[in-house]
Amino acid sequence: MFTADHNWARKELHGLHWGISVILDDRYEIRLRQLGGSCERLQDQNLDLVHNRPIVVFGNVWCHKDPVEAQRFRHPREYTARNIRWFYFDNPVPHLLYKGAWNPAGYKNFVRLVEGDTMRTPRTPIRPGQSVHRINHQLRELTQGKIQHWSDIMGPSRPVMPRSKTVLLCPSGGVVFEKYYNLNKTNWIMEVTQRCKQMGLEVELRDKPGRNQREIGDNRLYQRLMQKNYMCTISNHSMVPIESLWAGVPAVAVGAHAAQGGGFNSQGQMTESMTTTLEEFYQDGGAVRCPDQSQVAHWVQQLLLDCYHKRDIYSGAWYRT
Image (tube, rainbow, N blue to C red; front, side):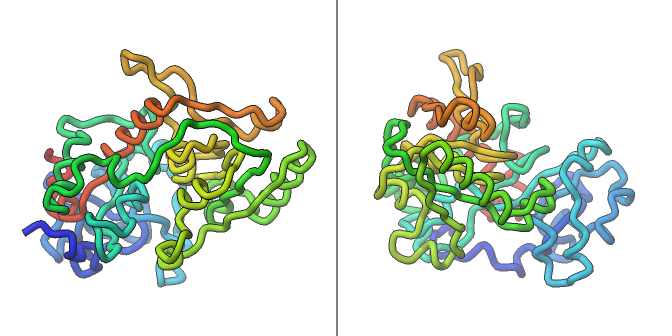
């Protein structure tokens, strides 16, 4: 029985460790072969051993408990350069993990599994059967009909516009800066803060709290965005931009991020970015893009195409349907 109170995130259900595993057969069951799945850890994270099979990249390898394995980071551009088909396994649209009728214990029962990138972009392929209707159906099933649509779990949405001269700076972790962008987090924060203050703006820093802390009180990002007026958020390599836009706060975004899709016209064609780059922000004196709420909702639906319940990940249903 498919119930919301079952913990599908337990390690013994999949056996995967941080880093790269090879998908060895076409069942696409994302768990180790010794547990009946399709995957086997890539020895020494050596891409020469992939042998024309797709791989799944489970989060960031530097989180691995083995200090030797933790040093074996592979930048995504290496997969592209070698023409390796790859899927990135990480946390989904954050609202799926929040506590609610669909997830009363706050289990990490949903995941994002994106083909060819760390987050969906307009280049990301859409396979037959990928549909937001799947998420809606599962939310209805998990809540016995209390939740009918993905938007019911997202919290309130507002028109996107600057509401003050205060910027909320939301950096990712220091190792992300180092490994993906060859930057120092502390220096980046100082440089962005200085530039913003030179533009006459106030800056608040939100260093992402731990997951357990985010579930206490009003520590979720969208709650903070709704409670205080901000001009925009500034973030890098993050889910922050889509949360920001949903809450009505313009997003300045750096690197790979969750709002790369841009605005769409009535024919579903992308028109322009929904976010502002840091360079544009500086050059245009703090001007920010303010997409329509329908454009933001459209892109949330695109992100949800890559979000799956872990039951479907383990069984291979995510790939077949």
